[in-house]
Amino acid sequence: MELKLRAITLRAVNYKDNDRILTLITPEKGKISVSAKGVRKANAKMKAVSEPFCLSDCVFYERLGRITLTEAEITDTFFPLRENISKYYAASVALELVNYFSQENMDGRRLFSALLSFLKDICYENKDEIDRLVSFFCEVLSDEGFGVDFSSCGRCGGEISGRVRFNIKDGFNVCDNCAREGDREYSYSTYSYLRRTANKDMATSDKKDGINGIKFFDYYLRGNVGIELKSIKFFTEKTT
Ligand SMILES: [Zn+2]
Image 1 (cartoon, rainbow, N blue to C red):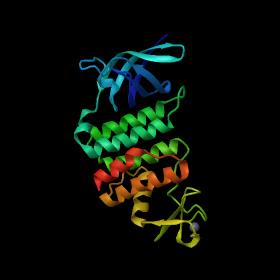
Image 2: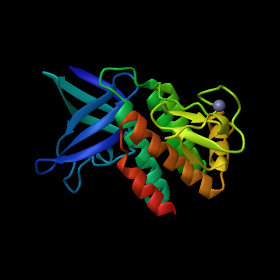
Image 3: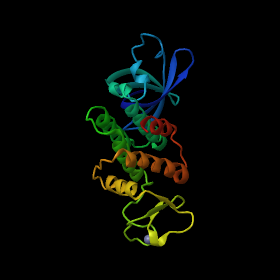
Image 4: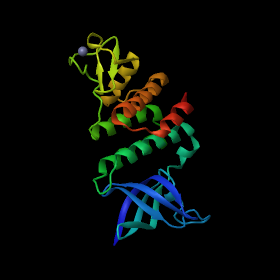
């Protein structure tokens, strides 16, 4: 059976001498894993699609549950990301997050379009990759049911002012009056920045709050959601 799908390449793993196994996100079928034969040969026609970030219109052949890539028309490789290490790692974090949340044979439209607009924004719209990555975290986590509420205290529902703590187990922010042992205090200025970003008030951070925002989501994902995005470490190392 032949399938035609628009796809963004999330991940590529070498296989045999010249092949790669690609993980792609597609709007219609969510995540798919396909084998791409011969793409590591020097002049391979479909070489570009076997690199992360690539947006393409692909034709696949599906047989006995295995999918093979047969044609790929490249729309965009987002090449400028490869010339800016900080943007490159920010985009890698976004791919990893999408790879984690996307599932096979599920509607992938929201994740696909969130990822595509993120890539376009940092690649061509000159949006700051740190601020844009923080807003990407807010958007994707909220869509996936793991959103963090920055609007009020998770215990009393009141406004948080002056000092803020985060409870990793419950995944909520806590005001000064409700603080208990085990809540972890973090910078109020980082909290305000995250609250503005979560409200889609595209906040521009001073760089410190931006990096702390990324570290906040790293801490939250590891401690509450149970996932570790390996590229976050590279990203925060390269940008600090
Ligand atoms: Zn409270």
